[in-house]
Image (tube, rainbow, N blue to C red; front, side, top):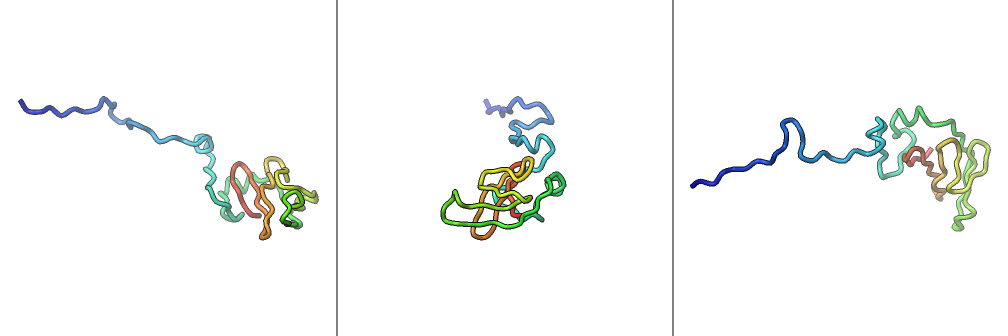
Length: 107
């Protein structure tokens, strides 16, 4: 007797396993990359939604608690919010990194 080929019981037009969808992609928002972006690299939808930000300067030191940036006429430390939803993530010797909706960027 000849062997019989078997098939898996997957309905026509469906995939056996769909790839996972991120929350931001499911909500129609772009998914943030793992790297820090320049402001001009942010997706247009993110740039349009960003609150107004005016960065006046920053001060880096080897002591993390002494690092600061002046944004919107306020002195901020790492971890503090510069505006609604915008967090000062890092102050480095080469500039600052902000985080908005998971997008890390340099202004």
